[in-house]
Amino acid sequence: MSRFPNNFYWGGATAANQYEGGWNEGGRGLSASDVTTGATKDSPRMKTYIRKDGTAGAYSQFGGRLPEGAELAVVDGYYYPNHKGSDFYHRYKEDIALFAEMGFKMFRMSIAWPRIYPKGIEEEPNQQGLQFYHDVFQELHKYNIEPLVTISHYDDPLYIEQKLGGWNNPEVIELYEKYCHTIFEEYKNDVKYWLTFNEINSATMIANFVPNLPKDTEASAYQALHHKFVASAKVVQYAHEHYPQFQMGCMIAGLFNYPLTCDPKDVIATQQRMQDYFYYAGDVMVRGYYPSFAKKTWKRLGIEESFFDKDKEVLFAGKVDFFTYSYYSTSCHTTHKDAKKDGGGNLSLGYFNEYIQYSDWGWGMDPDGLRYSLNEIYDRYQVPIMVVENGLGAIDHLNEDGTIHDDYRIAYLKAHVEAMAEAIEDGVNLIAYTPWGCIDLVSASTGEMRKRYGMIYVDLDDEGNGSCDRYRKDSFYWYQKVIASNGENLDF
Ligand code: BGP
Image 1 (spheres, rainbow, N blue to C red):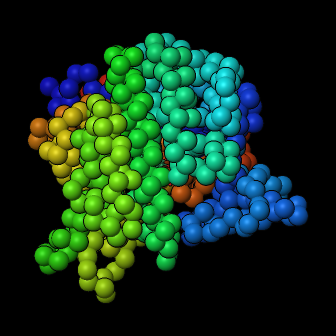
Image 2 (image 1 turned 120 degrees about the vertical axis):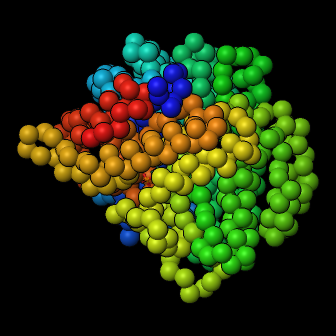
Protein backbone atom coordinates (compact mmCIF):
# COMPACT_ATOMS: atom_id res chain seq x y z
CA MET A 1 0.00 0.00 0.00
CA SER A 2 1.27 3.45 -0.86
CA ARG A 3 2.10 5.96 1.86
CA PHE A 4 0.72 8.68 -0.40
CA PRO A 5 -3.04 9.23 -0.54
CA ASN A 6 -4.82 7.81 -3.60
CA ASN A 7 -5.72 11.16 -5.08
CA PHE A 8 -2.26 12.68 -4.50
CA TYR A 9 -1.39 15.26 -7.13
CA TRP A 10 1.95 14.35 -8.73
CA GLY A 11 3.09 16.90 -11.27
CA GLY A 12 5.52 19.63 -12.15
CA ALA A 13 5.84 23.41 -11.98
CA THR A 14 6.71 26.28 -14.31
CA ALA A 15 6.14 30.03 -14.58
CA ALA A 16 5.24 32.05 -17.66
CA ASN A 17 8.09 34.54 -17.36
CA GLN A 18 10.73 31.78 -17.44
CA TYR A 19 9.02 29.25 -19.68
CA GLU A 20 6.36 30.67 -21.95
CA GLY A 21 8.24 32.96 -24.34
CA GLY A 22 6.25 34.66 -27.11
CA TRP A 23 7.11 37.91 -25.35
CA ASN A 24 6.00 40.17 -28.23
CA GLU A 25 3.30 37.97 -29.72
CA GLY A 26 -0.47 37.80 -29.40
CA GLY A 27 -0.79 41.35 -28.12
CA ARG A 28 1.25 40.75 -24.96
CA GLY A 29 2.68 43.76 -23.14
CA LEU A 30 6.10 44.00 -21.47
CA SER A 31 6.97 42.85 -17.98
CA ALA A 32 10.11 43.56 -15.96
CA SER A 33 11.63 40.21 -16.92
CA ASP A 34 11.61 41.36 -20.56
CA VAL A 35 14.16 44.06 -19.74
CA THR A 36 16.31 41.78 -17.57
CA THR A 37 19.49 40.29 -19.06
CA GLY A 38 21.03 36.87 -18.53
CA ALA A 39 23.89 36.41 -16.02
CA THR A 40 25.76 33.76 -14.06
CA LYS A 41 25.90 32.78 -10.42
CA ASP A 42 28.75 35.23 -9.87
CA SER A 43 27.44 38.21 -11.84
CA PRO A 44 24.03 39.78 -11.22
CA ARG A 45 21.27 40.05 -13.80
CA MET A 46 20.97 43.59 -15.14
CA LYS A 47 18.00 45.73 -16.08
CA THR A 48 18.42 47.77 -19.25
CA TYR A 49 17.23 51.32 -19.87
CA ILE A 50 17.33 54.25 -22.23
CA ARG A 51 18.31 57.68 -20.89
CA LYS A 52 16.53 60.87 -21.89
CA ASP A 53 19.31 61.63 -24.40
CA GLY A 54 18.70 58.29 -26.14
CA THR A 55 21.79 56.48 -24.83
CA ALA A 56 21.39 53.05 -23.29
CA GLY A 57 22.67 51.50 -20.08
CA ALA A 58 22.12 48.74 -17.53
CA TYR A 59 22.08 48.45 -13.73
CA SER A 60 22.26 45.52 -11.33
CA GLN A 61 18.92 44.23 -10.14
CA PHE A 62 20.50 43.81 -6.70
CA GLY A 63 20.91 47.32 -5.43
CA GLY A 64 21.43 49.24 -8.69
CA ARG A 65 19.30 52.27 -9.53
CA LEU A 66 17.58 53.54 -12.63
CA PRO A 67 19.16 56.93 -13.48
CA GLU A 68 16.90 59.98 -13.17
CA GLY A 69 14.66 60.34 -16.21
CA ALA A 70 15.71 57.01 -17.78
CA GLU A 71 13.13 54.40 -18.84
CA LEU A 72 13.43 50.62 -18.64
CA ALA A 73 13.52 49.28 -22.17
CA VAL A 74 14.61 46.46 -24.44
CA VAL A 75 17.94 47.60 -25.88
CA ASP A 76 19.85 46.32 -28.91
CA GLY A 77 23.00 44.40 -28.10
CA TYR A 78 21.72 42.71 -24.93
CA TYR A 79 20.38 39.18 -24.66
CA TYR A 80 17.13 38.62 -22.76
CA PRO A 81 16.62 34.92 -22.08
CA ASN A 82 13.04 35.31 -20.85
CA HIS A 83 11.88 36.56 -24.26
CA LYS A 84 11.91 33.04 -25.58
CA GLY A 85 11.87 31.06 -22.34
CA SER A 86 11.52 27.47 -23.49
CA ASP A 87 8.94 28.50 -26.08
CA PHE A 88 5.91 26.93 -24.41
CA TYR A 89 3.89 29.52 -26.36
CA HIS A 90 4.46 27.56 -29.55
CA ARG A 91 5.09 24.10 -28.15
CA TYR A 92 2.47 23.69 -25.44
CA LYS A 93 0.81 20.71 -27.12
CA GLU A 94 4.05 18.79 -27.36
CA ASP A 95 5.00 19.65 -23.78
CA ILE A 96 1.65 18.74 -22.29
CA ALA A 97 1.75 15.41 -24.16
CA LEU A 98 5.13 14.74 -22.53
CA PHE A 99 3.76 15.66 -19.08
CA ALA A 100 0.88 13.26 -19.71
CA GLU A 101 3.34 10.56 -20.73
CA MET A 102 5.05 10.97 -17.35
CA GLY A 103 1.64 10.55 -15.75
CA PHE A 104 1.17 14.08 -14.37
CA LYS A 105 -2.00 14.68 -12.38
CA MET A 106 -1.28 18.38 -11.86
CA PHE A 107 0.58 21.08 -13.76
CA ARG A 108 1.58 24.32 -12.09
CA MET A 109 1.85 27.25 -14.49
CA SER A 110 1.28 30.96 -14.29
CA ILE A 111 -0.75 33.36 -16.33
CA ALA A 112 1.26 36.33 -17.60
CA TRP A 113 -0.65 39.41 -16.48
CA PRO A 114 0.67 41.49 -19.46
CA ARG A 115 -0.77 38.88 -21.82
CA ILE A 116 -4.25 39.59 -20.42
CA TYR A 117 -3.88 43.33 -19.72
CA PRO A 118 -0.77 44.50 -21.62
CA LYS A 119 -0.23 47.58 -19.45
CA GLY A 120 -2.48 46.53 -16.61
CA ILE A 121 -4.71 49.58 -17.04
CA GLU A 122 -6.81 48.76 -20.14
CA GLU A 123 -10.59 48.65 -19.92
CA GLU A 124 -10.87 45.45 -21.91
CA PRO A 125 -8.69 42.34 -21.75
CA ASN A 126 -6.63 41.13 -24.68
CA GLN A 127 -8.72 38.42 -26.37
CA GLN A 128 -5.74 36.69 -27.95
CA GLY A 129 -4.16 36.33 -24.53
CA LEU A 130 -7.34 34.91 -23.03
CA GLN A 131 -7.60 32.45 -25.91
CA PHE A 132 -4.03 31.21 -25.45
CA TYR A 133 -4.71 30.00 -21.90
CA HIS A 134 -8.07 28.52 -22.95
CA ASP A 135 -6.14 26.41 -25.44
CA VAL A 136 -3.60 25.40 -22.82
CA PHE A 137 -6.26 24.41 -20.26
CA GLN A 138 -8.16 22.47 -22.89
CA GLU A 139 -5.03 20.54 -23.71
CA LEU A 140 -4.38 19.78 -20.02
CA HIS A 141 -7.93 18.55 -19.49
CA LYS A 142 -7.62 16.29 -22.51
CA TYR A 143 -5.15 14.30 -20.37
CA ASN A 144 -6.94 14.80 -17.04
CA ILE A 145 -4.19 17.06 -15.74
CA GLU A 146 -5.41 19.55 -13.14
CA PRO A 147 -3.98 23.05 -13.63
CA LEU A 148 -2.60 24.88 -10.60
CA VAL A 149 -2.40 28.52 -11.64
CA THR A 150 -0.16 31.19 -10.14
CA ILE A 151 -1.79 34.53 -10.85
CA SER A 152 1.36 36.62 -10.39
CA HIS A 153 4.79 35.03 -10.79
CA TYR A 154 7.42 37.76 -11.26
CA ASP A 155 5.79 39.36 -14.27
CA ASP A 156 3.58 42.29 -13.46
CA PRO A 157 3.09 44.63 -16.43
CA LEU A 158 6.14 46.87 -16.79
CA TYR A 159 3.86 49.88 -17.10
CA ILE A 160 2.61 49.32 -13.56
CA GLU A 161 6.12 49.06 -12.20
CA GLN A 162 7.51 51.96 -14.16
CA LYS A 163 4.68 54.48 -14.46
CA LEU A 164 2.52 53.74 -11.46
CA GLY A 165 5.20 53.04 -8.88
CA GLY A 166 4.48 49.33 -8.61
CA TRP A 167 2.99 47.80 -5.47
CA ASN A 168 3.80 50.85 -3.36
CA ASN A 169 0.88 52.48 -5.09
CA PRO A 170 -2.37 51.23 -3.50
CA GLU A 171 -4.18 51.78 -6.82
CA VAL A 172 -2.42 48.69 -8.13
CA ILE A 173 -4.63 46.62 -5.82
CA GLU A 174 -7.65 47.48 -7.97
CA LEU A 175 -5.81 46.69 -11.19
CA TYR A 176 -4.89 43.29 -9.79
CA GLU A 177 -8.50 42.73 -8.75
CA LYS A 178 -9.71 43.56 -12.23
CA TYR A 179 -7.19 41.14 -13.72
CA CYS A 180 -8.29 38.40 -11.29
CA HIS A 181 -12.00 38.96 -11.87
CA THR A 182 -11.37 38.60 -15.61
CA ILE A 183 -9.44 35.35 -15.38
CA PHE A 184 -11.73 33.87 -12.71
CA GLU A 185 -14.79 34.37 -14.90
CA GLU A 186 -12.98 33.31 -18.06
CA TYR A 187 -11.52 30.10 -16.63
CA LYS A 188 -14.10 29.22 -13.99
CA ASN A 189 -14.73 25.86 -15.66
CA ASP A 190 -11.06 25.15 -16.32
CA VAL A 191 -9.21 26.00 -13.14
CA LYS A 192 -9.99 25.07 -9.55
CA TYR A 193 -6.65 25.71 -7.76
CA TRP A 194 -5.22 29.25 -7.69
CA LEU A 195 -2.17 30.84 -6.03
CA THR A 196 -2.38 34.61 -5.67
CA PHE A 197 1.35 35.54 -5.64
CA ASN A 198 4.53 33.53 -6.07
CA GLU A 199 6.93 33.65 -3.11
CA ILE A 200 5.17 36.67 -1.67
CA ASN A 201 7.55 36.71 1.32
CA SER A 202 10.63 37.45 -0.79
CA ALA A 203 10.14 41.15 0.06
CA THR A 204 10.98 40.43 3.70
CA MET A 205 14.42 39.14 2.68
CA ILE A 206 15.42 42.18 0.66
CA ALA A 207 17.94 43.37 3.26
CA ASN A 208 19.80 40.12 2.75
CA PHE A 209 20.14 40.54 -1.00
CA VAL A 210 21.09 44.19 -1.13
CA PRO A 211 24.16 45.22 0.85
CA ASN A 212 23.71 48.36 3.02
CA LEU A 213 20.07 48.66 2.12
CA PRO A 214 18.70 52.03 3.28
CA LYS A 215 16.00 51.67 5.94
CA ASP A 216 13.41 53.57 3.91
CA THR A 217 13.86 51.17 0.95
CA GLU A 218 13.25 48.24 3.29
CA ALA A 219 10.24 50.02 4.79
CA SER A 220 8.78 50.62 1.37
CA ALA A 221 9.22 46.91 0.51
CA TYR A 222 7.12 46.05 3.58
CA GLN A 223 4.47 48.58 2.57
CA ALA A 224 4.33 47.16 -0.96
CA LEU A 225 4.05 43.69 0.56
CA HIS A 226 1.10 44.85 2.64
CA HIS A 227 -0.66 46.00 -0.52
CA LYS A 228 -0.10 42.55 -2.00
CA PHE A 229 -1.59 40.93 1.12
CA VAL A 230 -4.64 43.19 0.77
CA ALA A 231 -4.95 42.42 -2.95
CA SER A 232 -4.68 38.70 -2.26
CA ALA A 233 -7.25 38.81 0.54
CA LYS A 234 -9.68 40.75 -1.64
CA VAL A 235 -9.55 38.32 -4.52
CA VAL A 236 -9.69 35.31 -2.19
CA GLN A 237 -12.84 36.70 -0.63
CA TYR A 238 -14.26 37.48 -4.07
CA ALA A 239 -13.50 33.96 -5.29
CA HIS A 240 -15.13 32.40 -2.23
CA GLU A 241 -18.27 34.46 -2.81
CA HIS A 242 -18.58 33.97 -6.56
CA TYR A 243 -16.91 30.65 -7.30
CA PRO A 244 -17.37 28.28 -4.38
CA GLN A 245 -15.66 25.52 -6.36
CA PHE A 246 -12.34 27.43 -6.27
CA GLN A 247 -9.54 26.60 -3.85
CA MET A 248 -7.34 29.59 -3.13
CA GLY A 249 -3.76 29.23 -1.90
CA CYS A 250 -0.74 31.24 -0.81
CA MET A 251 2.80 30.57 -2.04
CA ILE A 252 5.73 31.19 0.27
CA ALA A 253 9.46 30.88 -0.42
CA GLY A 254 10.57 28.13 1.92
CA LEU A 255 13.93 29.12 3.23
CA PHE A 256 14.12 27.10 6.44
CA ASN A 257 16.87 27.85 8.92
CA TYR A 258 18.54 25.84 11.67
CA PRO A 259 20.54 27.30 14.56
CA LEU A 260 24.19 26.74 13.66
CA THR A 261 25.02 25.83 17.26
CA CYS A 262 23.11 25.04 20.43
CA ASP A 263 24.11 28.42 21.81
CA PRO A 264 20.69 29.73 22.99
CA LYS A 265 21.51 33.02 21.27
CA ASP A 266 21.68 31.17 17.96
CA VAL A 267 18.39 29.46 18.70
CA ILE A 268 16.65 32.76 19.36
CA ALA A 269 18.24 34.49 16.36
CA THR A 270 17.08 31.62 14.15
CA GLN A 271 13.58 31.73 15.57
CA GLN A 272 13.41 35.43 14.78
CA ARG A 273 14.67 34.88 11.28
CA MET A 274 11.99 32.26 10.62
CA GLN A 275 9.38 34.63 12.01
CA ASP A 276 10.52 37.48 9.78
CA TYR A 277 11.16 35.54 6.59
CA PHE A 278 8.52 32.86 6.66
CA TYR A 279 5.76 33.18 9.23
CA TYR A 280 5.24 36.92 8.76
CA ALA A 281 3.63 36.23 5.37
CA GLY A 282 2.21 32.79 6.13
CA ASP A 283 0.39 34.03 9.22
CA VAL A 284 -1.27 36.91 7.39
CA MET A 285 -2.46 34.73 4.54
CA VAL A 286 -3.56 31.64 6.47
CA ARG A 287 -4.64 33.07 9.83
CA GLY A 288 -5.86 36.37 8.41
CA TYR A 289 -3.93 38.67 10.72
CA TYR A 290 -0.40 39.87 11.35
CA PRO A 291 1.54 37.90 13.97
CA SER A 292 2.44 39.62 17.25
CA PHE A 293 6.13 39.89 16.29
CA ALA A 294 5.27 42.07 13.25
CA LYS A 295 4.96 45.18 15.43
CA LYS A 296 8.63 45.04 16.28
CA THR A 297 9.54 45.06 12.58
CA TRP A 298 7.25 47.99 11.83
CA LYS A 299 8.75 49.92 14.71
CA ARG A 300 12.29 49.22 13.52
CA LEU A 301 11.33 50.46 10.06
CA GLY A 302 9.47 53.50 11.34
CA ILE A 303 6.07 52.57 9.85
CA GLU A 304 2.93 53.49 11.79
CA GLU A 305 0.82 50.54 12.93
CA SER A 306 -2.24 52.26 11.50
CA PHE A 307 -0.86 51.69 8.00
CA PHE A 308 -1.42 47.96 8.51
CA ASP A 309 -4.34 48.07 10.96
CA LYS A 310 -6.69 49.88 8.61
CA ASP A 311 -7.01 46.74 6.47
CA LYS A 312 -7.52 44.31 9.34
CA GLU A 313 -10.99 43.24 8.28
CA VAL A 314 -10.03 42.75 4.65
CA LEU A 315 -7.15 40.47 5.64
CA PHE A 316 -9.35 38.44 7.95
CA ALA A 317 -12.04 37.98 5.31
CA GLY A 318 -9.56 36.69 2.72
CA LYS A 319 -7.89 33.71 4.36
CA VAL A 320 -6.55 31.10 1.95
CA ASP A 321 -7.75 27.49 1.79
CA PHE A 322 -4.42 25.78 1.42
CA PHE A 323 -0.72 26.44 1.90
CA THR A 324 1.97 26.04 -0.72
CA TYR A 325 5.69 26.70 -0.65
CA SER A 326 8.92 26.20 -2.55
CA TYR A 327 11.51 23.98 -0.94
CA TYR A 328 15.02 23.64 -2.30
CA SER A 329 17.40 23.91 0.60
CA THR A 330 17.98 24.92 4.19
CA SER A 331 20.45 27.30 5.72
CA CYS A 332 21.96 27.86 9.16
CA HIS A 333 21.88 30.97 11.25
CA THR A 334 24.20 32.14 13.99
CA THR A 335 25.32 35.10 16.04
CA HIS A 336 28.94 33.91 15.87
CA LYS A 337 30.66 36.31 13.51
CA ASP A 338 33.52 34.00 12.53
CA ALA A 339 31.24 31.24 11.18
CA LYS A 340 31.65 30.15 7.56
CA LYS A 341 29.03 31.45 5.11
CA ASP A 342 27.20 28.95 2.94
CA GLY A 343 27.29 28.70 -0.83
CA GLY A 344 25.23 31.70 -1.87
CA GLY A 345 22.62 31.47 -4.57
CA ASN A 346 19.43 33.50 -4.63
CA LEU A 347 17.86 32.01 -1.52
CA SER A 348 20.74 30.48 0.35
CA LEU A 349 22.14 33.25 2.44
CA GLY A 350 23.17 31.81 5.75
CA TYR A 351 25.94 29.72 7.27
CA PHE A 352 27.55 26.50 6.15
CA ASN A 353 26.05 23.23 7.37
CA GLU A 354 28.66 20.47 7.55
CA TYR A 355 25.98 17.75 7.64
CA ILE A 356 24.54 18.37 4.17
CA GLN A 357 25.84 18.46 0.59
CA TYR A 358 25.77 21.53 -1.67
CA SER A 359 24.80 21.79 -5.34
CA ASP A 360 27.02 23.39 -8.02
CA TRP A 361 25.12 26.62 -7.42
CA GLY A 362 25.77 26.44 -3.68
CA TRP A 363 22.27 25.43 -2.62
CA GLY A 364 22.21 23.10 0.38
CA MET A 365 20.55 19.75 -0.37
CA ASP A 366 18.58 18.65 2.64
CA PRO A 367 15.67 16.20 2.25
CA ASP A 368 15.25 15.89 6.03
CA GLY A 369 14.63 19.62 6.04
CA LEU A 370 11.62 19.02 3.82
CA ARG A 371 10.10 16.63 6.36
CA TYR A 372 10.97 19.05 9.15
CA SER A 373 9.42 22.04 7.35
CA LEU A 374 6.25 20.12 6.45
CA ASN A 375 5.77 19.22 10.11
CA GLU A 376 6.39 22.77 11.27
CA ILE A 377 3.98 24.26 8.75
CA TYR A 378 1.23 21.75 9.33
CA ASP A 379 1.47 22.08 13.12
CA ARG A 380 1.03 25.82 12.78
CA TYR A 381 -1.63 26.11 10.10
CA GLN A 382 -3.57 22.85 9.89
CA VAL A 383 -4.60 23.34 6.27
CA PRO A 384 -3.72 21.11 3.27
CA ILE A 385 -0.18 21.66 1.97
CA MET A 386 1.34 21.46 -1.49
CA VAL A 387 5.09 21.44 -2.20
CA VAL A 388 4.91 23.44 -5.42
CA GLU A 389 8.64 23.81 -6.11
CA ASN A 390 11.56 21.52 -5.38
CA GLY A 391 14.46 20.26 -7.45
CA LEU A 392 18.11 20.32 -8.31
CA GLY A 393 19.55 22.94 -10.66
CA ALA A 394 22.43 21.17 -12.41
CA ILE A 395 24.41 20.98 -15.63
CA ASP A 396 23.21 18.17 -17.89
CA HIS A 397 24.92 16.61 -20.85
CA LEU A 398 22.94 15.74 -23.98
CA ASN A 399 24.52 12.63 -25.54
CA GLU A 400 24.64 12.03 -29.29
CA ASP A 401 21.93 9.39 -29.03
CA GLY A 402 19.59 11.91 -27.38
CA THR A 403 19.90 10.48 -23.84
CA ILE A 404 20.65 12.47 -20.70
CA HIS A 405 21.89 10.54 -17.69
CA ASP A 406 20.91 12.65 -14.70
CA ASP A 407 21.27 10.19 -11.83
CA TYR A 408 22.25 13.12 -9.50
CA ARG A 409 18.79 14.63 -10.09
CA ILE A 410 17.06 11.31 -9.52
CA ALA A 411 18.97 10.89 -6.24
CA TYR A 412 17.90 14.37 -5.12
CA LEU A 413 14.24 13.87 -6.05
CA LYS A 414 14.11 10.35 -4.61
CA ALA A 415 15.35 11.54 -1.22
CA HIS A 416 12.74 14.33 -1.21
CA VAL A 417 9.91 11.98 -2.17
CA GLU A 418 10.97 9.73 0.72
CA ALA A 419 10.97 12.72 3.06
CA MET A 420 7.42 13.61 1.96
CA ALA A 421 6.26 10.03 2.59
CA GLU A 422 7.71 10.26 6.10
CA ALA A 423 6.00 13.58 6.70
CA ILE A 424 2.68 12.06 5.62
CA GLU A 425 3.29 9.25 8.12
CA ASP A 426 4.00 11.95 10.71
CA GLY A 427 0.43 13.13 10.07
CA VAL A 428 0.97 16.00 7.65
CA ASN A 429 -1.88 16.60 5.18
CA LEU A 430 0.24 16.89 2.03
CA ILE A 431 -1.84 16.80 -1.15
CA ALA A 432 0.49 17.68 -4.03
CA TYR A 433 4.08 17.69 -5.25
CA THR A 434 5.01 19.72 -8.31
CA PRO A 435 8.81 19.79 -8.66
CA TRP A 436 10.20 22.94 -10.21
CA GLY A 437 11.07 23.27 -13.87
CA CYS A 438 9.81 19.79 -14.75
CA ILE A 439 10.96 20.87 -18.19
CA ASP A 440 14.13 22.98 -18.49
CA LEU A 441 13.51 26.72 -18.35
CA VAL A 442 15.30 29.99 -17.66
CA SER A 443 16.68 30.34 -14.13
CA ALA A 444 15.08 33.14 -12.14
CA SER A 445 18.19 34.12 -10.21
CA THR A 446 20.81 33.90 -12.95
CA GLY A 447 18.91 33.88 -16.25
CA GLU A 448 20.89 30.81 -17.27
CA MET A 449 19.57 27.85 -19.25
CA ARG A 450 22.46 25.67 -18.14
CA LYS A 451 21.08 25.59 -14.61
CA ARG A 452 18.60 22.88 -15.47
CA TYR A 453 15.91 21.37 -13.26
CA GLY A 454 13.90 19.45 -15.84
CA MET A 455 13.04 15.85 -16.43
CA ILE A 456 12.67 17.01 -20.01
CA TYR A 457 15.73 18.55 -21.64
CA VAL A 458 15.32 21.64 -23.82
CA ASP A 459 18.06 22.12 -26.40
CA LEU A 460 18.87 25.79 -25.80
CA ASP A 461 21.98 27.38 -24.33
CA ASP A 462 22.54 30.57 -22.34
CA GLU A 463 22.67 32.67 -25.51
CA GLY A 464 19.51 31.16 -26.99
CA ASN A 465 21.33 28.91 -29.49
CA GLY A 466 19.97 25.45 -30.14
CA SER A 467 17.05 23.65 -31.75
CA CYS A 468 14.77 24.08 -28.71
CA ASP A 469 13.82 20.42 -29.20
CA ARG A 470 12.77 18.33 -26.24
CA TYR A 471 14.51 15.15 -24.98
CA ARG A 472 13.52 12.76 -22.20
CA LYS A 473 16.12 12.56 -19.44
CA ASP A 474 16.61 9.43 -17.29
CA SER A 475 14.68 11.25 -14.57
CA PHE A 476 11.68 11.35 -16.95
CA TYR A 477 11.41 7.56 -16.90
CA TRP A 478 12.13 7.41 -13.18
CA TYR A 479 9.39 9.94 -12.34
CA GLN A 480 6.98 8.06 -14.61
CA LYS A 481 7.49 4.96 -12.44
CA VAL A 482 7.15 6.98 -9.24
CA ILE A 483 3.81 8.38 -10.35
CA ALA A 484 2.54 5.04 -11.67
CA SER A 485 3.27 3.44 -8.28
CA ASN A 486 1.90 6.43 -6.35
CA GLY A 487 5.30 7.12 -4.82
CA GLU A 488 6.21 3.55 -3.83
CA ASN A 489 8.64 2.56 -6.55
CA LEU A 490 11.61 4.91 -6.17
CA ASP A 491 14.26 2.59 -7.65
CA PHE A 492 16.58 3.66 -10.43
C1 BGP B 1 12.01 30.19 -7.02
C2 BGP B 1 11.12 30.79 -8.06
C3 BGP B 1 11.12 30.12 -9.36
C4 BGP B 1 12.39 29.37 -9.72
C5 BGP B 1 13.12 28.76 -8.57
C6 BGP B 1 14.50 28.25 -8.87
O1 BGP B 1 12.46 31.17 -6.17
O2 BGP B 1 9.77 30.83 -7.64
O3 BGP B 1 10.66 31.05 -10.30
O4 BGP B 1 13.13 29.96 -10.67
O5 BGP B 1 13.18 29.62 -7.47
O6 BGP B 1 15.41 29.29 -8.83
P1 BGP B 1 16.49 29.57 -9.92
O7 BGP B 1 15.76 29.60 -11.20
O8 BGP B 1 17.08 30.85 -9.56
O9 BGP B 1 17.44 28.44 -9.83
